[in-house]
Length: 357
Image (cartoon, rainbow, N blue to C red; front, top):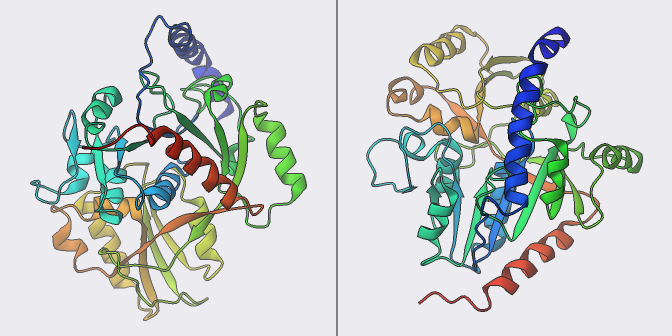
């Protein structure tokens, strides 16, 4: 890996130069960043891979959905469509095909809000601001064409010691100094019992600016569910054999959580946003069938469940007892109320003069 990074480093220099120039053009106003009069909250990160953006977006939705007419706006990574689109059960095909797996997940969990996708977030917000009071942009930190009113930047605690190298030699989408644009920094996926010394070490790594508020969060694993979101009374024991199927950026935290209950894990691991094939599912089904234990389950993530529910896979997946492991977030240091207040104050202040007619 070290030698591969060295080989790719010249390409990272070229990539970095392009990103630096692009950011400079936005910072100087030569490229325009559009600011909207309705509240716009951005959730993002500096590197590729999962830092917990979807759980944070869902947390914000749960916090605000009963008070405001709101929408989420994503790029819709991995979808088979283009342009502006709203998730709609009446649309042909599966929702994940049309809008991508994360927006499909938002739509399934929060059918009462608008879930939209658009590569051009300016175009998307122009559509949504007509009859919405609030827009949450998922994975939009590098989308400089929109200037959010409140920008949340997430760092995965388990990856803050990684080299600060740009793509393709490293994992950064933009230079580390880009963190200065954030209003709030969230250090996610922390151990629940993280010590003050460990928190201080993390802050030394990230070096937040004086005007930025910092919060620490951990993953909150919830009760196993069916594909339809119904709670399933399944209890994992030390004898349970878990067939785990994932196509996410980092499945390590989930594996570690399951290992608290059982060490018998057969992991069918695929790349982030992997579009599962029938061959993949048949391999899982054959392995599950061949296992002679009566104490066995199949577990996947909420995001993967959206792709596993595609029509072309249903003939096989509907015959399998696949369970979904939902996740949320816990704020550490008793700072949930502080974070909630920060977000609510921002939204309330910026919706006072905006009425939906």
